[in-house]
Image (cartoon, rainbow, N blue to C red; front, side, top):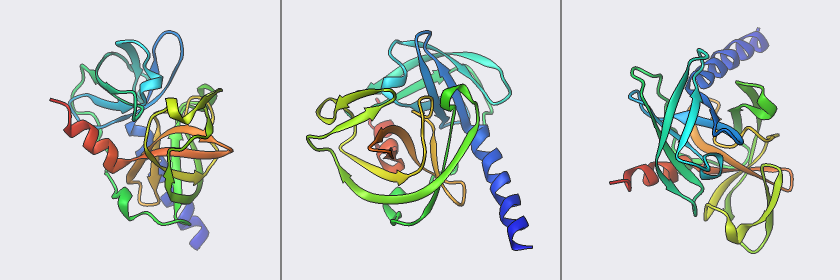
Length: 202
């Protein structure tokens, strides 16, 4: 049956995304993050890691200490290093080829529910920062004070705890990092922008 096949494939992709998604605790608040390299580099939002030290919970419930080694508050991106090896790594998709209507998956820890999956569709890929307001976690802030200059906008339900988590396509490829909620729509930083951020770090 086609439905059974779709369910089986979706469950497999969900498990794959869960393995690369971590929960971050900065001792005041927290969110999610994405394992970016097997030797312990983790990408998240800058607003998720207020300080320089965090606790990172891996899929197997192991908690490791992490240090913030780079951040870009304008793009709302941060890079964490943990002492770990042979971590699962993501398949990175080309966020520049996305089209409205494509199905997307979000993985994170909304309201503390680790490894929760949400599904939706791309709303637009042409959102640009402007003099508007957005909901960032549970606080309303001016976009002039927030991060990225461009974003993927998806019609997908997110909640506090999803920040820093995976936005993926139906192949399980990471195409962005969930960062905010704007008028009920999810905003995600595109994967090519994340790659540029990491490459810019000395």
